[in-house]
Amino acid sequence: MSEERDTARQEGPTPERYYAQLVPGDGGVSVARLQEAMNEGARRSWRLVGVVNEPAGEGIILVWDQQGFISG
Image 1 (spheres, rainbow, N blue to C red):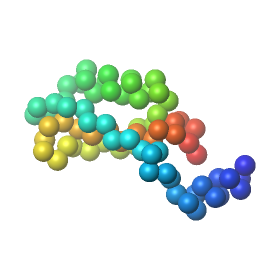
Image 2 (image 1 turned 90 degrees about the horizontal axis):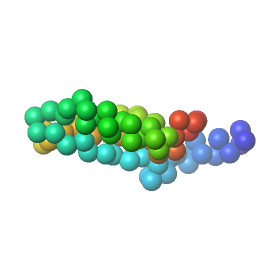
Image 3 (image 1 turned 135 degrees about the horizontal axis):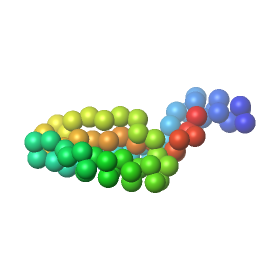
């Protein structure tokens, strides 16, 4: 298993591993909408790895690791 992990680290993550989800909101995102998006990711066992403002100011972007909580 250690050998598999070392190989994965050398190759790096696959592009499909990460997912950027737009949480829309004009002038700001409501806590309810943000909580709903986070709950959806948790139900899928994704790990939240980043949050950024949407460049045009139309919400925020949640960056998910789709390999889940036990992704190494």
